[in-house]
Length: 163
Image (cartoon, rainbow, N blue to C red; front, side, top):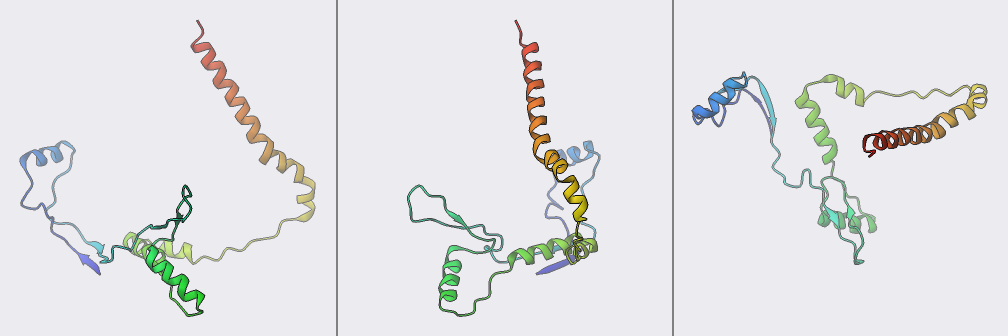
């Protein structure tokens, strides 16, 4: 259910003097009603469920399921797909993404999600010419940096705690 509008606070008539003083000390005041807001209420406890399937072998890690699946619906899905029947998968992730997008009210989010990314080919001559350089930058440089920073850390500790 989508609710929009101004909502009154549950604590409208319940705020104590100590709470009001704390808010005043923080430079804010208690608002008995909100400005225009949006609330989405979902009445399904499995909406963001992150269940897992326990493996039969002792000591093995359980298998995590996708968001919104529980072990009962997932096993039913496996049975139905083994029989060749159609089964509509749960689309909780997309629903929650759309809810957050709507609540944030930022149209740039939906524009970014719908954006087509065009991959351009690299210049093959330039790639062949600079292959070794980029391999060294991506592989050797991080290792060298870790060694140098480790040596510096060791030297600083040695000087700090020298007797």
